[in-house]
Amino acid sequence: MAADKEYTEDTLFDGRMKCVQHRTGYRFSIDAVLLANFIQPKPGDRILDLGCGCGIIPLILAYRWPAVRIAGLEIQADLADLAGRNVALNNWEDRIDIIAGDLREIGKSVKPGSFDWVVSNPPYRRPGSGRVNPGAEQALARHEQAADLASVAQAALWAVKKRGRAAFIYPASRGAAVISELKNTGLEPKKILAIFSYPGVAASLLIIEAVKAGGEELTVLPPFYVYDERGGKYSPEMTACYKP
Image (tube, rainbow, N blue to C red; front, side, top):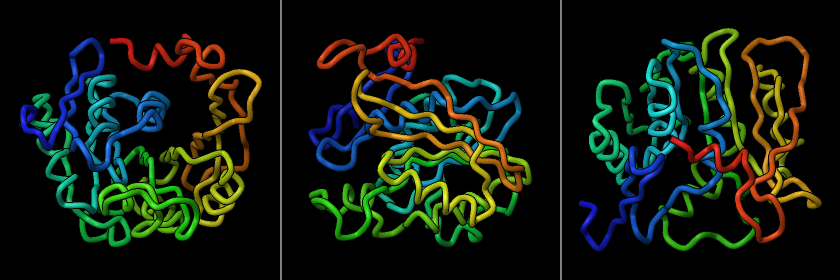
């Protein structure tokens, strides 16, 4: 498959993890790498990735946390199939399950309260805002055509157990809307990590961790810089995300 002109094979962690992607379709971004390296599950935890794409977040989590089990839910059949192939490519069939399904109908494939963690790097552009990505695969992955903020929050609430945790990555410009939606849904924001391209500029992304039925207490974590300076090298924190 990797040799096919329709695919590329990428590696992470000095080649210890492989990920095949569509050459011209949706391809994972740094957002997924940041989110996968953010959460801190416990041994034995069950983690669900809503909108798993090619499976990159489940793959990173399986590599980083050998004692957890992960499931990925993906609406696009081609991407769900690709995620399944990536699981097999890394020999993690016993630890990662890929589910082809719609998070708006999560009750058809996921039992309520069956996960300790839910993570999601969901579509983040509202319909009609900005340039729509070329190709249906990229458009569904980046624009809220099949999963808006409310449906992502509701799916997370359904899947995660009481006092379980959910983590989302969104553009910083949508931070207020994300926090409001999570609180209204019953997911209480607990931690916020602001991600900056480099020092001296406004934050570009937020990772927000919430607890189902949690109390009102919020921690703003120290800033995370992707680069050490404009046009420079990865920061030590970003470099650590790719270390074996």
